[in-house]
Amino acid sequence: MGIPKYMGTDTQGNQVFVLGRGPAGRLVEETLRSILFAGGFAEEEILFIDLQPHLNFCTRLGGFLSRRLGLIFPGRQLAAVGIWCALNHIERCVQEGRKQLKS
Amino acid sequence: MDKELAMWVIYHGYHAAPVPLLAATLHRQCYSASASRLGVAKLSFLDDTLFLDHSDFDKWRPKLSKKSFGVVTPLGSDRYGNRVFVLGRRHFLSILERTIHASMTLGGNQEKILLVDTAGCTNAKIELGVWMQHLAGRSYPSICRLGEMLIRQGTRQALSKVANLVQSFEKELC
Image 1 (tube, chains in turn yellow, blue):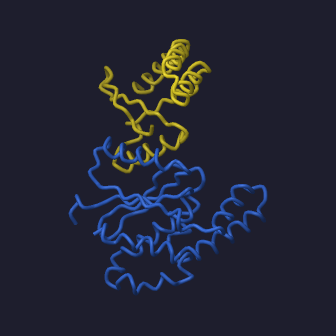
Image 2: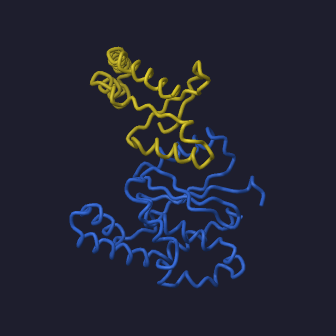
Image 3: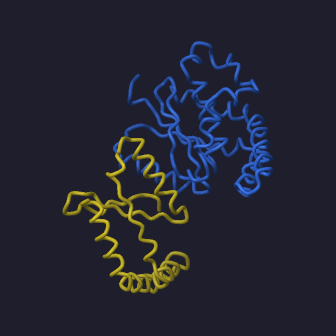
């Protein structure tokens, strides 16, 4: 939580990361952004895409079962089902992000 | 100045102002070029009640509103070339600490980070004043004024404690 994990590079050469914000929410994003700006990065070099609105009940419940209650197997299955259901929304989100990068 | 030795000094607290801001302002005064000539012990502002009115403190306070939670705000640098920042972190210190170190690595910054927690320097007057200001907002100006008065009194009281904190890590800076 709070550490961007490098996932790879896209077809346009942009580095892609995933970031878990946890209870700190937007504070993590603000901290990351401000440190990178202070280090000389420009605003257009960083794009944050918030996927929290696409979290559904199944995914949340799965995460709760897996992480809080330690019921890893049913929790993961449930979270996977939730992600599968939200896949169209997530895909749309990714496409919009790619459009923003192109423009 | 050897660039490799320069650090990023981040003063953090629940709110970015007033205590972390006071610490950062004092840091810049204590480790300024003029302080180098006079010696820290001879600096008159350390027991001067007019310090708050004659420093950058009031200039920066409105900028560090409650909207700036999580933002690492640069306030300048000291005579050693260390950059000074303030951060309002709420109660997410451990998560944001990881984020700060990770983003330094990500950005390719070689500088060391010194995170200074100012939570121990705060007092009831400051806490009450900040709480009153946030609660009242713009709707109740009289409560806001009372909150402001408490913050100023509390900040003056905290001045010596914050000055001791700032001076306590002088060896790490140079």
